[in-house]
Image (cartoon, rainbow, N blue to C red):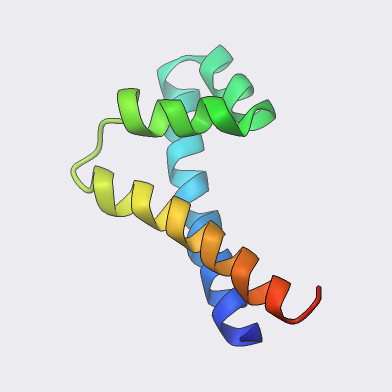
Length: 77
C-alpha cells in the first residue's frame, strides 16, 4: 500500500502543478488563490482550465490525491 500511496501522490502532485501553472499563466491572482485555496483550484480545473488533455489531468489530480490518501491512511501515516 505504501507504493500505491507514493505513486498516487506523485501523479496528484504533477497534475496539481500543471493546473496551478496554467492558473498563474491565466491571471496571477487565480494562481495565488489556487495555491491558497484548494477548492478554488478544483473549480478552476473543472471550469476554466483549457488543455488538450484536460480531463485526464483533472482526474489524475483528483484520483491521485485520493489514492495517496487511501494508501497512506491504511498504513496509519
